[in-house]
Length: 214
Image (cartoon, rainbow, N blue to C red; front, side, top):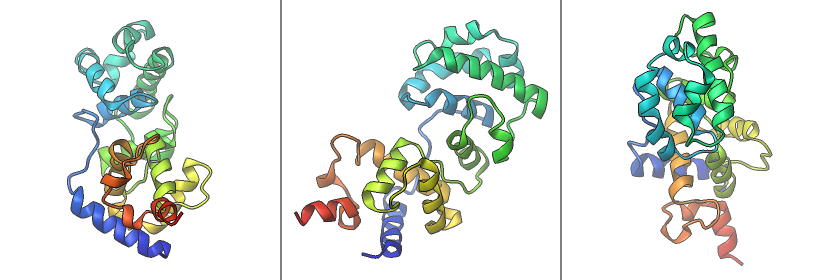
């Protein structure tokens, strides 16, 4: 199967089967989303969603969080993975938002990446989810699934995977495609034991078709 055909079939299946795919992080504005995504690094969305209500209640915006100490932020996120680093990043990020962006979350890639704790993946999530800007965040799920099913080829880094996905997926579908691939990896095409027998895209999957011929 040619790569273009695989993309066409997979995107068509996902659009039919997952029309309402969206982020599983709970948030109500760009600031809350940014904080939640920073907290979600190497941590489950479920754990983040259990943690953020109290955090957002006490620090609903950048100004409030900038006035908190690192220790105060830590006390509210201690159940999250790497709470020390993340508490420091959130404190510095809030102060940077206040000093450089008037307390508002910027939508530009370069501006977002000036914020402590914000790399390219986090910036892409904020751009796609909060601002509806065409973007393809590549986390561990997207990186793995894209390689397995044949959407990416010989990509050694998330940036390489992102470039390949962006070159084949129509711009208007990028944000949705991110959620399709991510959720597929989270619940079906899992890291250790992919549920190939339950998978709706196995007929177009490069890894499945290769293994079935053995």
